[in-house]
Length: 284
Image 1 (cartoon, rainbow, N blue to C red):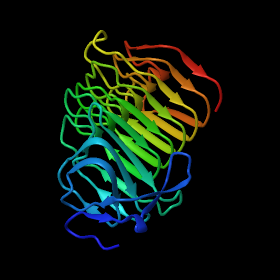
Image 2: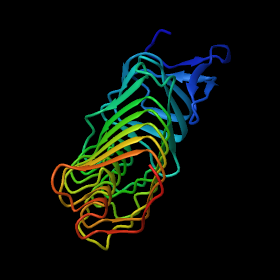
Image 3: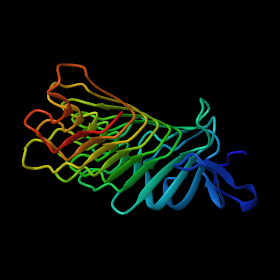
């Protein structure tokens, strides 16, 4: 399929295949093929059918589904804004080395790579496949909350995900001074690497200035291969950042590596002066 400067509609006869959250091949009809001008995604299906760069930050409205075609790289340096009741679900077409990719690596400060902006509440973010590489802006998560905002709901069912937080922010979860709950994080499969920056968790919360200002969400890992790393002695690899809070952490399965560059306050649990609910390990 040739990429044009304008969006086109893929007919039902030429529907685009994708793998759903269970790894079953499905077909999307009436999908929009992305071009460099597509900065507003409003409901429905979108396909990265050829290499394309969208230079501006993309805004998601409604329930948006994105298919990354095999062998294709979609570059969105400024990231994707997903707020409040809106949702973004990312799919791949295969599980091999040829999976399509999305890269986000030059996000402006106060914006998450995929998620909310400053003082905004993020919506629902689901990754079912593809290679997803995201770096958050200053004070913002790679995937989740912007500075001072909450992270909404994050679910990973498959694919290969590498998420790095900006300064004081988690790789996956909350940004700096996320004063509301950073939402619930659920990982069921895939290969996930989440890196928290200064005083922040790899998966969980970012740094906050006051222990009374944040309410943490729950983290559940039920499968996949997960590496969560913090680069600070003041944060947990999985759990809360400095002075932050985390709800219940549950590990039901998978291969889970919790790592710290320096001597961490806690590999799974709470950061310095932070709090955590129960830590439950049922398997894995």
